[in-house]
Image (tube, rainbow, N blue to C red; front, side, top):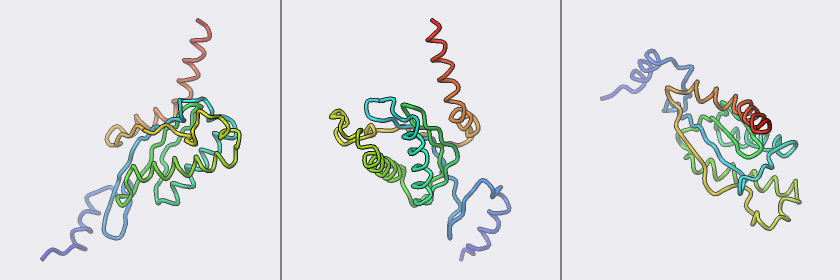
Length: 160
């Protein structure tokens, strides 16, 4: 007969537990890098609207039991590094985030809904997702400094 408490206590000793989350019967570290864009990659995620998206992501992730590790809202896309509990699928997280944020933005900024091109959809249908493992620090640095790189590229293009 397996003695689960003993096995878990041994696992705790062997694993650096600060990297892992714990639920009643599971230790987990399901971390993902997710990128998604507004419809037609419109450059609308700026000023108050961008700040609202930033706040909404933090609030909705917390409500779903997720932990935002890194977040960068660019004017035409969003980078999110997030820890997702095993009971929640990535597609459910993205459906909830994109759906709730779109509803909030359309109600707070009615001019967005007037544009016929949106078709009552604020976000593109798809998204990019990659699991974050050994290369975690590289991805976190990339997300953190994405804005600086993009500004440098735009400045370079303006000079040419």
